[in-house]
Amino acid sequence: MSLSLIKMWISFAGIILMFLAVGLILLSRHKLKGVFSVITAVIAYLCMIVGGIIIMYIVLSGPTP
Image (cartoon, rainbow, N blue to C red; front, top):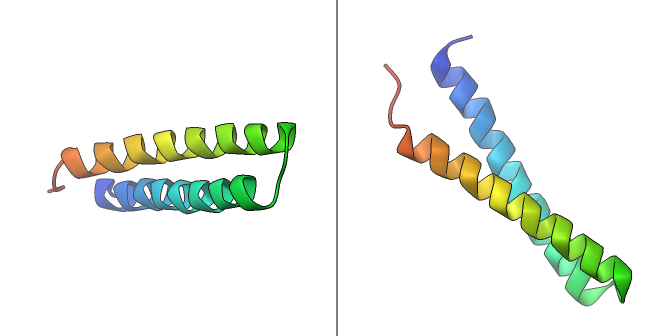
């Protein structure tokens, strides 16, 4: 597998984590109450941070040869 293809799959993982974070945040704010809401929100924000770091790494690493 080439470096470009590996970067593509890694960026897909970052995008999926971002979508998962949005869904979990909406779920925790509108459907859940109490401890479940807090746990879901913490997981969502961790997904958003990790996804953002992945996307930032891919974008700032530049083009592949």
